[in-house]
Amino acid sequence: MKGRSPLVVLVKGGGEMGTGVAHRLARCGFHVCLTDIPEPQAVRRGVTFSEAVFEGWKEVEGLVARRVAGEEEIWEAWKKKTIPLLVDPECQIRKTLRAPVLVDAILAKKNTGTRLEDASLVIGLGPGFFAGRDVHLVVETNRGHNLGRVIEEGEAEPDTGRPGEILGYSWERVLRAPAPGRFRAERQIGDCVEKGERVAEVAGVGIEARVGGVIRGLIRDGLFVAQGGKVGDIDPRGNRAHCFTISDKARAIAGGVLEAIFMRFPPFEERG
Image (cartoon, rainbow, N blue to C red):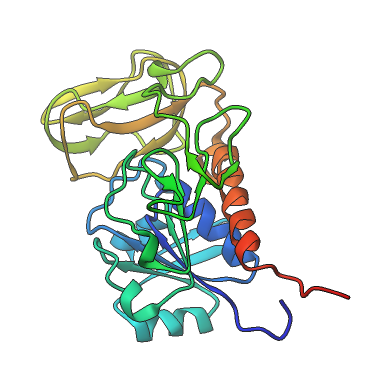
């Protein structure tokens, strides 16, 4: 891509998967811009650029995302080799930024408004998108043999509703709100906990670990959550470094997005 201007990619959603995509693309020389909602409820906050919404900036594995207020600041962020993040729930910036590539990384398990006409190449992550109808390409997000595969026609595997297994634990790993209300953490990301240990509370109702391990993620204090909403994640492997590095799943999905982009925008000129 020597001699060419960096390709602009707009990524909707600064959560774990959006961060993995943005990180890989930025390292590969793309100009990446993230959009997010005013109060993202990312669980794996140690490795999500959405934290910049609250803190103004967030570093993940050597790359920094900074909150910006408009197109002018987006270009300034790129000049400083940082990733701009814009609070823009409806992704209105697409109309003025006119990025050739748009990636919907919200992972809402449904299409929340992304359309084929939003960019020259529109990529949807996971279920809720149909390649060739509302997006150009879909990247598989379900763990297993097809994780990260680029789908040119059709849709991703349906949502199983079951968290991925780690050391045989699935549902037990996930911390959920026992009632609607404001979340308050009593432990921190990276802390080791035992089964039955109190980790947080919602509306005064305690949340206990159902498996021992390291706390890999917790949503931010003070956020309002619905009953049953995911508020945390415990990794039974107990490796603290995993709390602050991009996951294998996010890297696989990011690789699929990179492949999808190069399918439409080849990085090498044809040779005779």
